[in-house]
Image (cartoon, rainbow, N blue to C red; front, side, top):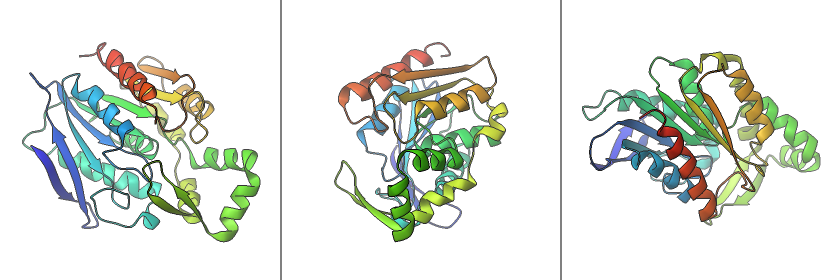
Length: 259
């Protein structure tokens, strides 16, 4: 069906792309990118394609306040708004005539946080969850920054912003309040609700959402249907083709257990 537009709860336009696999559709997967990214980022495409090639139709969308086609301003982007968009999209997807269950959710970084929070809040709706290097807890994020980069954190707080350039060349003015807002979010308290099959993937050299954070989350999830995979040598964003392909293969191999 191609590109589709919808509105979030604030009336902002969200743009996504619906893709259908060859042959029988085995389910529907909603895909959300990370902070400062968009649906076309190669890492996100690899994650999406792992589901598409496994027989799922996919809805991959640009979160508002990002660098895609959806409405908004990056300087207004927060983890809370990431989740609101994901919640609005997933509820909308399930009401469409083309929706076919079971429902799978996948996302990277802040998108990973959003899909896990949705699964915690609506566990009866979600059959499969695949977070890639998810943000686990604002408290853990702050503690890590304070330990490893205290001077940089203090400067960011004092200045109120910092400028970063993404791999795609997009210039990002990251406001300190956007980072501070993460303190309102923590997946650990409701992790007991994550009883559906879950695959967490993280790079061994991820400095943003490190393995130690994923292990804390993993240990809080009930035993039975959880898997944690580590891509050796990979950072937070899988910019190398080999890292993207490894992530893709891990997801496809995991899905084979269930479909």
